[in-house]
Amino acid sequence: EHVASALQEGVRNPVPWSGESSWLWMVVLRRAGLGSPGPLGQVLVLATALSLTLLAITWNALLACRNACQPGASLHSDGLEQPNVIQQNVVLRNMTQRIQTAEQALLRLLATARHAANQGAKVAEGGGAPAGAGGGGAAEPDPAGRTDGIGGGEGGGAASDDNEAERTSEEEEQRAMIKYDRNTKKFLRFRPDFQCGSRVPLLPDEEPVECNPDSDTPCCSALGWCGKTKLHCKCPTCIDYRQERRG
Image (cartoon, rainbow, N blue to C red; front, side, top):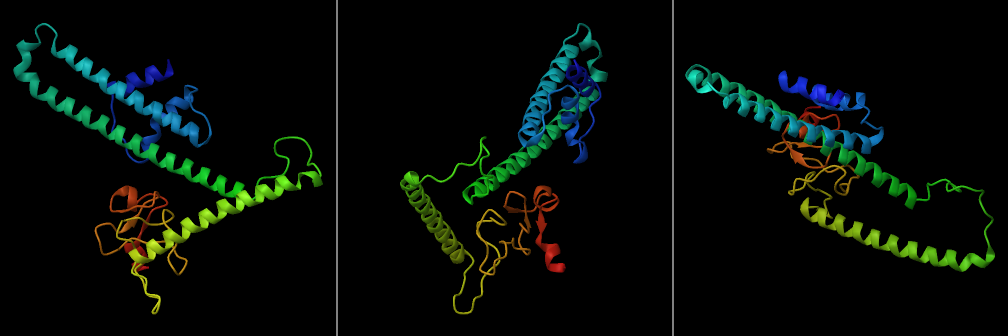
């Protein structure tokens, strides 16, 4: 009931969304008891908000069709047709902005969840998980089980070798892209494929790959791509290398 009443109010009095108000649907859903903590809960809330927004568009279109099809509507069409068209265009533009804002927020949350999962996997590979986390006390090492331990070590070593080979291949490919000179140690600080930041290996000086500040894509987004939109230059984790150069 809370969601339905909020949806009806949004259709009757649509307001443009800005960066701060893009979480309006999330607040409504949390009050209705549909929100849950954590990145996955936020993804669920935003997906639900996007569905409700699409439903609001359909509802508004049906209301417009019903009003246009009422008996006697054609008698006043000359004076009302143009204002109605303008109002419909405003509403549709408003709904389109809401969908785009929800989609962008959903992409950011998915990237955050993916990054957290990768960090967890790295901690697990490095042996960072606490002993006995599954319950019960830590058991003493069994001499009879040393063969299994050795076998597991060999398997882990093979996986580590594969990862090392893949990382070396990526670094060599990147050095070719940035025109690395082994003699002078000079290189470009950006790649021609517009990737940057944590998406690619570090530069030879152990610094992140940057974006070309003199190009049309001077900013690195949170997802690791160079561009010039607000999602590349204005987000909290974005880097504008034009400002970095001035600094």
